[in-house]
Length: 148
Image: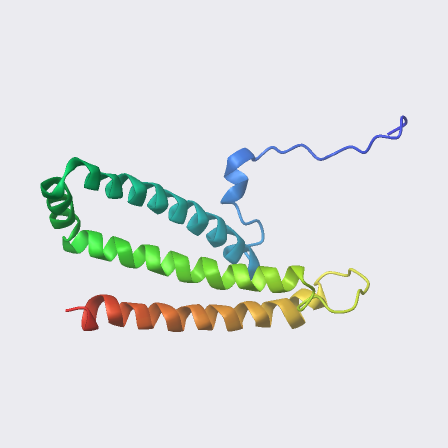
């Protein structure tokens, strides 16, 4: 640091750091799950585009693919995508509200445990996860009970 540069800590975890939560607090679980669900939704999006391209091959190709994807395992998979979407959307809204300053409050001295996180951000996380669970339960009802 003699020449005025700032040293950065070495990243020894690499991509494993995406899944290693350290202290494993509630917020870290949300952080890890947000990344995993984002990647899962992206994978589903790519598979959806690939599956939709079967329409180009003709009506029989499309109908055989839809018949194959109508099996119960794929219905359960669609529900897992729906669960991932609900969580990712609600957590994303919470993060946007935090970025806009709705859950941060006035600046204070950063002393661990961070009171702003415990008193403002954690309750907001709990509220949005409760909303996500409500959507997931309503979606499960539509997927498995009302859909038949």
